[in-house]
Image (cartoon, rainbow, N blue to C red; front, side):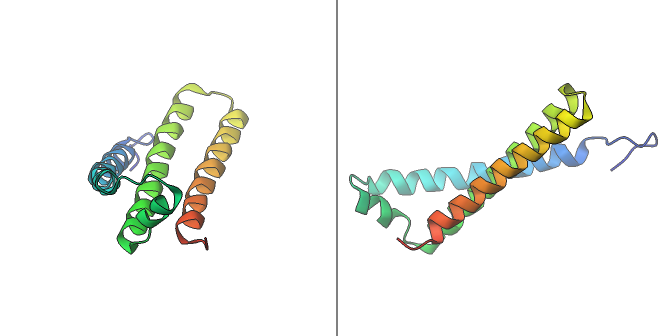
Length: 114
């Protein structure tokens, strides 16, 4: 949403941060309980943790949500504190590449062949 002066009001950003925080607050305790109840002690036990589809879907959802949450926060920091446009755009690109790469890597780990 834009104000009359043409600047963003921040409501959408605020809502995105709160929505992603809620998703993380719901997903992470469930994953933690799953991991703590099974208490894997070796590599094969760790692999078995991620066999159920619900665990893989929840892990990918949490990873994607965390990346989006981080992006919104980093974007706001860069907008507020990095004045040179070229530097700000380079930082945006670096963060996008790192976050997208992290989500892609998690998907490859969860659905890749052992």
